[in-house]
Image 1 (cartoon, each protein chain N blue to C red):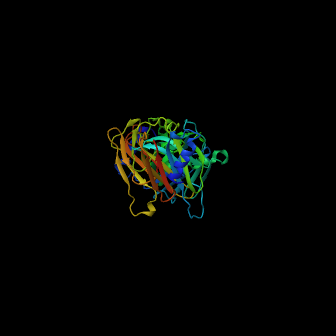
Image 2 (cartoon, one colour):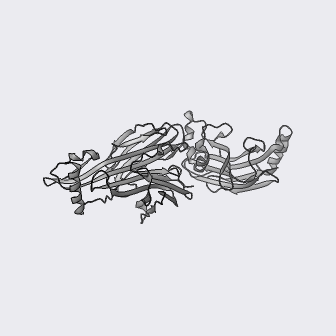
Image 3 (cartoon, rainbow over the protein chains, first blue to last red):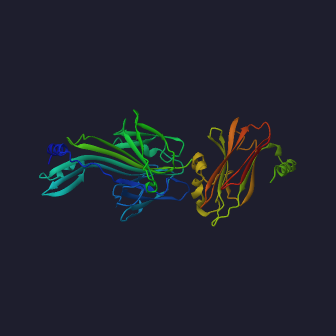
Length: 269
Length: 172
């Protein structure tokens, strides 16, 4: 199947309005600490896909795409990886001073279709969508760019890992993500494909949903410079999510779905 | 120690040393706590401007004696001080690091020409004392003062959780 053909199918699928994009589940990583001192510092990190934050209740997070960058940009190996029924976990030894970035960046295309009456799914690089059988029906395809990040700092926070790559949604810390406290203004900038993104909707949800009646989401929108500013009233672990849908530049008629998520710790002042 | 006794001590040592240079003294009481598991608190003392900007570290008491510098693992629990200063330092720090102190009142003296005070610009400041205890809590006390010292200033506050009485005296 070539791209043109696919696009026709995609258009068809879109026309049917059958694209089920809504994914209620949230994917996240939860570090044991984000601010560390001492010469022998480790963090242990849980990963899960769940509805409620931060509870293990649905699926473990797959760690295939996990990438860990040291403060100097070196690739760090995750240790003690394990996958349980509801969560996965790994450890990271923080041998350098500064900020480590733990991330998963997923790019490519995702498709659902029917083949001989069977529902099928396919995902892969955009340039390999011709792997989808030509006789597939009910094809729904979208381009994906999703990024999930967690930051942990031993000693003084550092910024070397925040150089934008120009791909997907990225966070530029005007306030360092490991320097968040209640009562002090926090500001972040968001880029889409390297450019400041106006009008992005941000969602922040604090840990411990089980113990309160209202989720209490914080909703924010980026300004013309792609910035948001806020003051956290309560300390805790927060899950940040940004989602954006735009037309794909690579697959005619398909949507490109971009997302960014991060787990941020806010400490009491 | 009472202020009277302190004065006496100062006078006494004036015979042998540059006592008149003593400008700032702090008393920190580590309270006796009825808890199942007690560890001596980590304590940091520093000077910040009245706007809350970190100016000068005075002392940090932590588990200095542990092998492999392991006591530094909990320095981040002095979370205010860690953010303001500690995370920028390499431990131990000469003239700053000290061992944790037992229950009781502990005093620190700083001369006007000491490295801690010699370069302090004229202004309004707070002495900040932060304590954090393993399996316990955290407490911060601030006492205001003016620098340089033109007249004797005394401030004190009673802690409620991890600190007892904290007192500051400045003498011209």
